[in-house]
Amino acid sequence: MDWLEEELRRALARKEPEPGFTARVSARSRAGGRGALSRRWLATAASVLVLAGSGAGYRWYQGVRAKEQVMAAVRIAGGKLNQVQNRVLEVAK
Amino acid sequence: MMPVARAEQPVADFDALVREHQAMVFSLAYHVLHDRALAEEVGQEVFLNLHRNLATLQSAAHVLFWLRQATIRRAIDETRRRRRQPQVELEKVAEPAIGPAERDPMLSETLRRLIAVLPEDARAVMVMRYQEDLDPSEIAELLEMPLATVKSHLHRSLAVLREKLVRRGLGDR
Image (tube, rainbow over all chains, first blue to last red; front, side, top):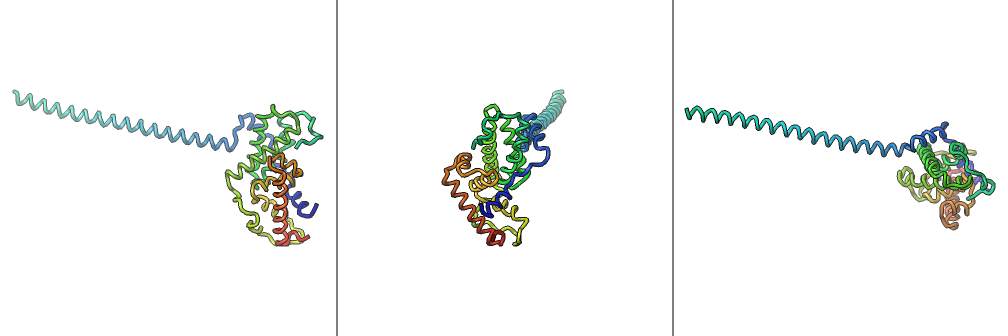
């Protein structure tokens, strides 16, 4: 074996992961295997739900506003009709 | 690759398997990705996948083969997905920013960095050869690659690494 192959074996010798690796793997297997990559998907899904919820909330708010505007228009129109009716009655007397 | 001495051993319980193989799995991922945090994540995912597939593995040798194959594939996939280490022609890799020395303590790190920018298949071959000490036929079986391709990757990668190190005064021995 030449010097380069010796150096490569030294450079690529096995290394231990950070302490507690087995415990972290066991914890994840008990938790159903959710890891950082899965958590990223969950975070993305949560963001989508929040956005969808925000959209639905905004549409509900727009509906309430539209209903209030319609009711205000009806009240104004009703008031005007009352005024017109009163004038008609006064003229008829 | 099925080591004869281990071929008849039954599969141990999951935690014992993790303890036994964690250095091998973590190091394979680390030497491909050159990123400890990412190597830990890939290592954990490989073991979780092992946990799901444990019933299909009949022997300790089968577990070892499965772990090596799953780890190297997962690490290469992660490299392709993230492109953290841009793949370039080995001849065009910049020289590491360290000076020559009689017995450079940074030589190992220099080699790891040079290997980490090898094309993915060549990287996998080099790591299997010099971390796991597998011979070319075992590597060919594990990586599902023609034997001639494995030998070509080894020959070419060694030649270029040697040239780069000698040029830097790190390997003129």
